[in-house]
Amino acid sequence: YDTKTPTYQTSDPTSFAFTSARERWPAIITGAIDDVHRTVSSISSSDADKEKLAEGKAIVSALASLKYELQHNRALTPLPDDSFPDIAGYNAELQARGTPKWHDVEWLYAECYLYRRIATLFSMARDPYWKAYDIFQRQKMSTFKSSRPAVLELASRYREIIEQIRGSKNHAVVDASDPAAVEEAEKVLFTEMAEICLWGNATDLSLLTSLTYEDIQKLQGSNARKESEKNILVNDLGKAFEVLNRAHKEGKESRRVDIVLDNAGFELFVDLVLAGYLLATGLATEVVLHPKSIPWFVSDVVPRDLQALLEAMQDPKAFYESASDEHDGKSNGQAPAPLSDDEAANVKFLFDDWSALHAEGQLILRPNRFWTHAGSFWRLPKTEPDLLEDLKESELVIFKGDLNYRKLTGDATWPASTPFVEAIGPLGPSSGIRVLALRTCKADVVVGLPEGKDEEIRATSGGGGDSGARKWAWSGKWAVVQFSDGKS
Ligand code: F6P
Ligand code: MG
Image (cartoon, rainbow, N blue to C red; front, side, top):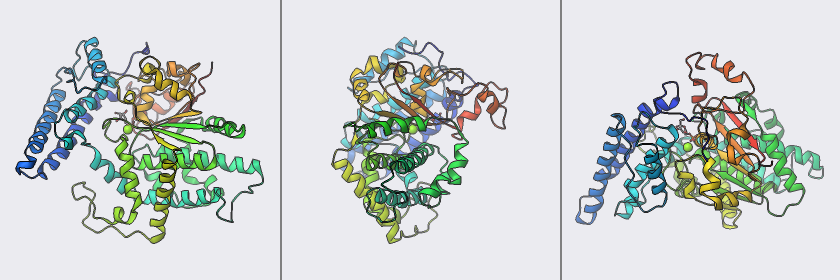
C-alpha cells in the first residue's frame, strides 16, 4: 500500500535529505542535549531527587550516543519496547528495510524513526517528570513569545471581525441583508485567513509582521497578501471555500472541518484564528484538531502545547511582560515593553472565545498515534481504518505544513507535474475524504505544478539550476495549496 514511485533517500546528494541527515539532525540532537542538560542542572541533588537526576543524566548520554551513531553512519537499531503498539511497526519495517545505515536510508522513515527513538528515552523513564518531558517545549514557547507583534496584530483584527459577524458593532462593512455581499466578504476573509495559516508555517514571519490593520475592504487589496500570493504556485482555496459554503447554504446540520496540525506556537495560534472564523461564520459547526502524541519534528503540536498557548493568552500581560528566558538567545537584557490595555484585552478576547468554543465542544482536540507512525498517509486506509472513517465525516480535512505534505504524497520522487490527486494515492479519488493541503515547500517533493514550472523556477537564482536538485523547494519561500474532493 505504499507508492511504487521511489522515495527520497539520505544517500542522494541532490536531495535535501542528504544535508538533513548529515547536518540538521545532529544539530537538532545537540539542541535536545543542551535542553535536558540545562534541566538536569536545575535539579537538586537531594535524596528526594536522586533518581530524577540520575535518569536525566542517563538521557543526556543516550542522546549523545544517538548523535554519535548518526554522525558515524551506524545502522539504525531496533527501538526498545516502551509498550506503545507502534513500536512493533517501526521495528518490523526496520527489519524489512535490511537494517539500513543513517546515511543510506529512506528519508521519511529515518526522520520519523529519529523522533520516535528520542521519545522512547522519555517514555521508558521511571520518574513521571521525565515521562511527561518535552525536549522542545522551551523552544516552542520562546518562539511564540517572539512572534508578539504578529500575534497582537492578528488578535486585534480577529476581534473586530468576530464582533462584526456577531453584529455586536453597528458599522458592519457589508450589508447583512445582501446575501451575495455577505458571501463575497466571507470568501475574501476565508482566503485571507487560510493564507495567513499557510504562511504561518514558513519559518519567515516577515510577511505577517508587516501586515497592518485595515478593514475588510482594504484587506482585500492588502499588498502583503497580494505579494505573497505570487509565491503560491497552485492555489485551490476557491474550491475549498465552495465546499464549505455549499454545505452551509444547503443547511447541512453538521458541518465539520478537520485540521491535521503542524507546528505549535504562532502556527497553532493562526490555525485557531481560522478555526474560530469558520465557527463564527457557520462555515463549520465543529472543528477537530489533530495533534501529535509525542514531541515530533521539533515544533509540532502536542496536546500540552494547546494548553500552554491558552494559558499564555489568559494573562497576556504576565506572559509578554515577564523577562525573556536568558538562555534562549533572544534576550537583550532589557525588560519587554508593556502591553497596552487594548492589546491585552484583544488577546484575552481570543482566549475567552476559544475557551468557550472548546468548552461547548465545537473545538475539539483528537490525538491519534497514527500521525506519529513512520509511514506515509498512503497507509491510512489499511493501518487505521477507524481514523479513515472518522475523517470521512468531515467536510474538509486540512493538512498543514511540509511534513504532512510529504506524508500525503509518500515523499516520493514524482515529476512535479504529477496531478495532486494521483500523488496522494488512496486519499485521492474515491477515498471519501476531501483533502486540502496548505504547504510551504521545505523539502524536495512537489506535485501538481503546471508543465514546465519546476524547470522555470530551477533556472532562477538559488533554484538549483542543472545541479539535479530542486533547491527552490527547500526554503519555505514557495507554497502550494492543493485540493482533492475524494470523489470518483
Ligand atoms: O524539509 C525539512 C523539514 O525539517 C523536514 O524535516 C520536515 O518535513 C519539515 O521540514 C518540517 O516542516 P513542517 O513543520 O512544515 O512540517
Ligand atoms: Mg512541523
